[in-house]
Every structure is written in C-alpha cells, then in structure tokens.
Amino acid sequence: MAKELVSLHFLPPQFHTPISLRPKPPQNPIFPRRRNRTSSNDEAVPSNEVKTIAKFKSRHNYIRVIEVSRRSDHPLAGSRLLLLDTPGNIHSISFLLKTLTDSYFDVFATLPPIIPPGPIGVLGFGAGSTARLILELYPPEYTIHGWEIDPSVIDVGREFFSLSKLERDHKDRIFINIGDALDASVRTGFSGILVDLFSEGSVIKELQDPNVWRGLKGRLRKRGRIMVNVGGRCVEAEDSERDGDLVMVETLKAMSQVFGDKLFVLTLGNGDDSSVALTGELPDLDAWKKSLPVRELRSYVDMWKPFTEFTLS
Image 1 (tube, rainbow, N blue to C red):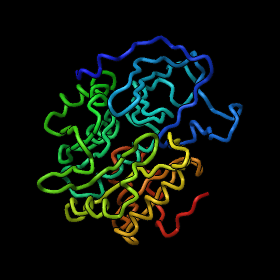
Image 2: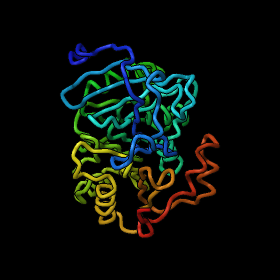
Image 3: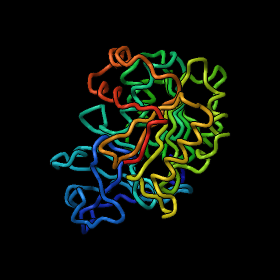
C-alpha cells in the first residue's frame, strides 16, 4: 500500500450525535438534510449504528471509511461507505449481501447495452463501485479503464472495498490508472465514458468548460456515449458559493454546447437529489429495458428527459 496509508487510524465509533451523510446522489432521498434545515428534519443514521474503519488525510482528500450496521433500519444498513472531502459526500458504496447500490452507480450500470462492446472509461474511479457493477453484470466484451487522481483512494478501495479481489477475478478486464482523468485515453477510443469527477465536494470546475466536453467527445468510438454525474442540491461543497444546483446547470449548459439536442437528463428521487446526464440519441426504450441484466435497473430507463425540458423543481 502507498506510504500515505501509514497515517490510517482504526477507530471505534465516537459519534456523539446522529450523522447525516450525503450520497452523491442517491436513488431515494436517504439523507435529505440541507444547510438551511434543522436537524429535526434529517433522516440520519444513529451514532450507535455506525463504525469508523479508517480516517486520514491524503495529498488530495480527507478520507473516511465507515460501516452502517446490518441491524439498522436505514436504507444504507449493511453498507460500507467511502467519504471524501470535509462535507462527507459519499463517493463509493458497497453492500455485503447485494450487488446493486440504490444510487446513481446503478444508473451508470445501464450504459453498456446502449454502446458498442469495448473499453469503458471511468473518470473518477473512487473505490470501484461503478467498475464492480459493470464487471459483475456484463460479459467480457466490456472492459473497465479507470482513472483516479488520488492513489490513496485506490489503496482504500483495495483494502476495504474488495477492489483487489475484483482485479484478481477480472484481471483482463480492469485497468486502473493514477493521474488526471481529463487526460484519459485508449488507443482504439472509448465505447463509453462514465464521468464522476468531484473535488472539495463539488463537480470540478473544468466540467463547466465546453472545450473539455469537446475533448472527451473526440475520444469516443463511433456510437459511443458519455454518462455523467452532474451533481445537484444534495451535494454539499466546501465552498458555499459552489451551489450544487447552479454548478449542475452550468455543467449541463456546457455539455449542451457540444452535444446539442443529443443530451438527456435523469433526476433521481423527488428533485432533492442529484442528476445524471447522457449523450447521444435516445435509444429505443423497450429494447434498452430488455437488454438490461437485472430487472431492478429497468425503472431508470423511463426517467430520461431532453435537456431542453429540464427544469429545477
């Protein structure tokens, strides 16, 4: 493991008040707390149902790994979570007894049937939640090429999220790169690109630049697509001026300058949660549903709307 991991602290649970964690984004409003709400309105995990496994600072992140008790009646019961940045937004989710996450990672897992077989770029790899879903649900024709800027995050994935086992089980299908995700490329071009790039609790500023999207579009194969976690109001930034909704809209506007009317948006939950964007012509929805490997993913297919019809609730 990297030298930075020497600073890991294995701690017993020491929370004195219920914690309210913000998934990035969840399918349901699991943690709906806003900065302007009182704690009485929070749907929080009681402190005695949470255990901190690791907590340390790397060069790029404040990293925490926590477990939610399987005995909890919270939707995240039995999960292990990777929290990054001071606000504690969730960047990876792993359940002991199930594959799906009930979060935007499951939306990402609907991409393979609507792209050509081949390499899928995961920009912002985290601890491997997206990679796990695709590798376990789809045939070997789809390979994962992940980029993560923080080597300590990859170390944490291998140590606490079974990423090492995933690499052993799919050694010819998963390739992890340490470096700037915006420089990601493969020789033959990507069949699809999944973008999940956050820093200091916010979608990175580069994604509000149309030129960045032109560059990513140019690295796609014919009929390739990009799917993006564009954030939203449930994502709390360290900089209070980086409002989640405003950053999301600016990101979508930048994408629309490149993809025009071939841009669609899916909003999770009841509008309090984040959104995912998709490029390309909208596929045949019935065929898309039938090609998905598990029934639970089908509900996402009907949720896409053209960006031209997208409004904040």
